[in-house]
Structure formats: C-alpha cells, structure tokens
Length: 241
Image 1 (tube, one colour):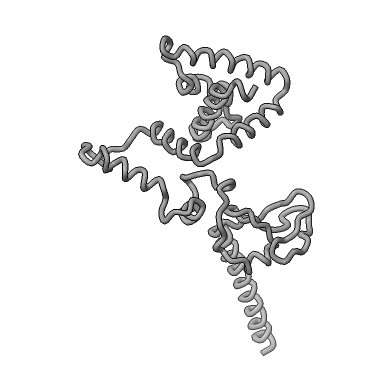
Image 2: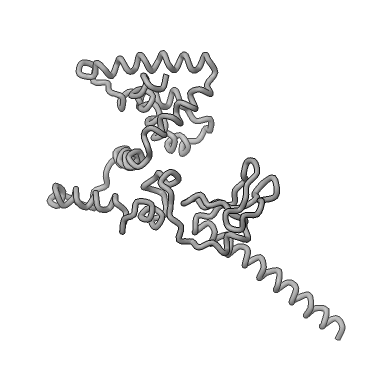
C-alpha cells in the first residue's frame, strides 16, 4: 500500500513537471511568433510595463522586434500584442511577418503585391508562360533587395557604412578609399568601357568582402550583400571617404 501511494505521488509530481515544461515551451513558441525575443541589455534598463529595474547581467528581459518595447519576461504576458511596428526596426519587405509589414506601412496588404499585380496587368497579361516560367535567381534577388533599399532610409544607411569605415585600420581605410576613387572614375566613363557600379560590384564584391566561413551556401547568401555594399561605396565615394 505504501509503495502504491508513493508511486502515485511520484507520478503526480512527474505530471506537474511535464506540464510545466510544456507550458514554458508553449510560452516560448508564442513569444517567438509574436516577435518577442529574450534580450541582454547593456547598462541599466527599466521595464516599460511595470517601471521596475531589470536585474541581472544577461537575458534581463524581452524586447519586441516590431516596436522595440522592453519589458520583464513575466510582464510580457500582460502586454497587448497589437503594437505599432516601427519602420526603423522593420526595414525589410521580404522575410518578415506579413502582419508586421502591413501595420508598419499602414496598408491592408503587402504593397509589393499591389506593385507586382499593377505591372502584370499593365504589360504582362499576354506574356507566354505567365506565372509558370521561373525568372533568373540573380534578377529575383536584385528586385527583392531593391524593395528593401527603398524602405530603408538612405541617409541612415550611409551614416552606418561611414561609421563602419571609421573602424578600419588606417592602412585598410586608405587602400579602400584610393580604390573607390579609381572605380568611381571608371563608372564616369561608362559610355566607353560599359562598366557601371553594378558591373564593378560583381567583380570586386567577393574580393573585398569575402566570407570567413568556407561554405558554398554562406558564400552564395553573402554575395548579394557584398554587391550592395560595394555599389554603395562606389556611388557615394565622395561622401563616405
């Protein structure tokens, strides 16, 4: 009898533990879905819900990836999930939550859908293989990056690039500056040499900004960003250096 009661008691404890673990897992999944991420704050921070200090050295609270709200983990359960996304934190059109995107731009649907449909109806309805024939991957990535660039603030982007350039060692900075001046001169003679900033970025991107990871997938993923940065450096050489 004693052993049976002990077994029942242990079974109840195990059930409680399993439920608590499942509950924590559900909360974690819900937090990720809502864009609430555990964050380590640098310096003193106070919860924006209860106004109390966030204690600890790491993972003191959570931050909303949409609006930037900082609260305790336990307070996040009481914060409404209908925040207004901040465009400074949501600079992408692709690879982001659809609800976040439309709320950030105050639209009923993703603006990219409206733009694409207008273009198709204006000049593509009679195109052979519409919606069936796949486009070139490089062209698709260029279009996606173009949308992301138009949403982000150009001045903020240049300021960020300039701040990074200031962190380079003097020899690296001077070499890069001298090269960008030369490449800018090349683009000024595009009518004769057919080399614009887009062509040059393909040539110099992988050389100047090679990935430290020896991975084909990483290299392919970084290529689009390498091209973008080199293009920015060439076109804005007079401002950045």
